[in-house]
Image (spheres, rainbow, N blue to C red):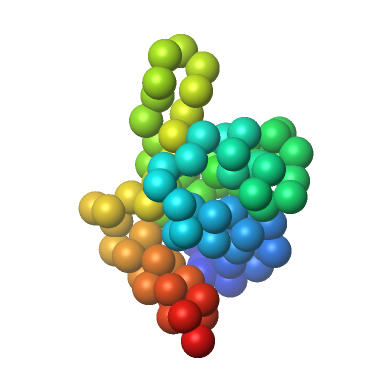
Length: 88
């Protein structure tokens, strides 16, 4: 997939910013901080995970915590881009 397809969504960018600035949050925390509903946040999180940018861990059967996929070159590039824009 092309980079513009990954980063073209304002909601996705807000979610990435939330993940950049906090310890691994769960979907509810991400949705609240990004200002979107749970279903929309989960949709974008799954998209980013399918692209290899994010990964999640489960706590129990229902709670997912998301973070950048440290093994992915795409994730490292997106993280570096986000950091460059949030520090300037």
